[in-house]
Length: 223
Image (tube, rainbow, N blue to C red):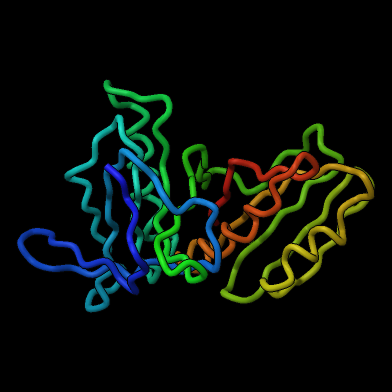
């Protein structure tokens, strides 16, 4: 089945016999706008109940690409446990398709239709908050704790510097601090109270960094 729709500010889903609404996160550009052979899960936000979140996963088929529709008003604290549950469910399924992937659904405002961000290999970690140095010349920790400001730690064997950046200057800040002709690995360290909209905005930005010189690590740290 092809999942390819025009832009909507929200998805209207029938769940438990009544209509529910998901406000999808918005991004300015997505490289992925069409996916075949899909099934979908939904994470609902209920503004009338504090910390309320509901997962609808009834129609998921393990051998398909999974589209996870998360309401942008949810926090990571609310959403991530359910996302981890879905990851484990697919991983442990007796029916597998090695080519099937997982995606977050977004509104691509530049194309005025749905866009998708892959998270198949992302590992959400709460057990440790200190990334380990490896063969890269340096590693860059992006600590996201608000909708606008990001704290970047540029670390090498010789230096450890911290800089505050507005989210609009993220890519420029990273590139300007990169060692000349060196390589770096980027880690995300995320405040559990961050809204899902801000998380997806950050994911969309750093997707442009994946090059031979810069690698985005699959581990994402929640604190």
